[in-house]
Image (tube, rainbow, N blue to C red; front, side, top):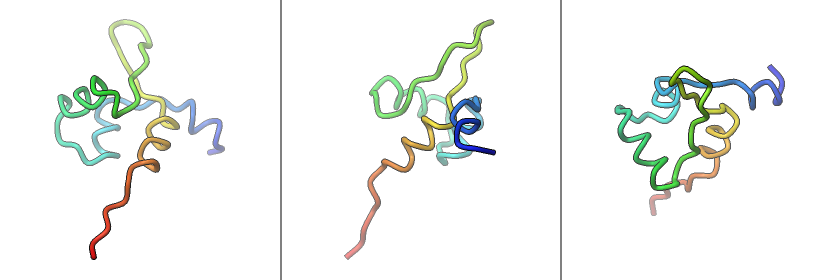
Length: 68
């Protein structure tokens, strides 16, 4: 899959939870409200999805925990 296809791939809330390690939907939506996570897009019929590229970019931008 090329980079443009990955950016346009749409993820469900379950996909986002699996990629991030969060165990609850409310945790993801809380991060969205706090503007600490990319918001979903509305695709119609009351369904929302996250752009895979935005989630990947967000995850790569998170700080790395270091231990001294």
